[in-house]
Amino acid sequence: MSAQKDPADVPEKPKAPADPIDTRLVRRLADILKDTGLTQIEVERGDLKIRVAREVTVAAAQTVYAPAPQMAAPAPAAAPAPVAAAPVVEAPAAPVARTGDLVKSPMVGTVYLQPQPGAEPFAKVGDTVAQGQTLMIIEAMKTMNPVPAPRAGKVVELLVGDSQPVEFGEPLIVLE
Image 1 (cartoon, rainbow, N blue to C red):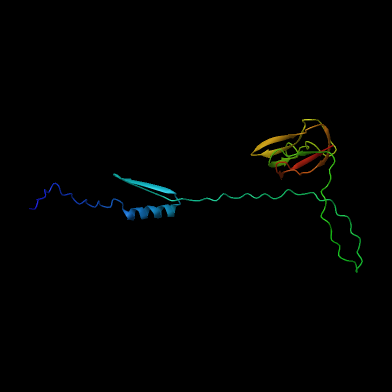
Image 2 (image 1 turned 180 degrees about the vertical axis):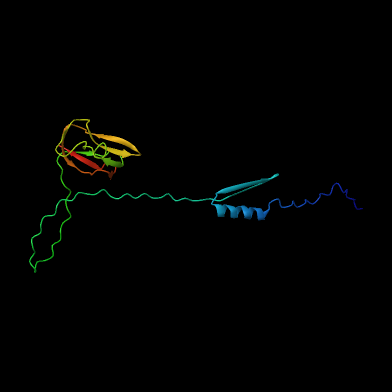
């Protein structure tokens, strides 16, 4: 005997939902992103909400600083060499031995030797300075920072020039 099936017991085939995404709209939005340089765009139409985004990678610009100029010792006058002499190979210059204490830069910035253009410098070679006296200023991020003398003494050598960029720890002045 065959059993009759009740039409209510037979599961209905699910209807394929209509494609709610308009691919032409998505492509137009992607073209707008590309043409305008935007990184994302969102459109809402009724219950449909489409957001198109793209990832942008930005490389940080690398800052390269020129090395600080080094003061070279004057080269001795060379005597004329005999024609048959063997070639002379010069040894690398030895670092200059400084007597006294180095005053080093406390920060990266631009050093100024006077309070304003045309004014007398804070300290010159041969000047006697007191502890805490301003030797120069360093501009960092639009702020003028004084460099005080760590102790009383005589300025023996200025190792930097006016308006010169300096690095942290770079020697600025020699005090005796």
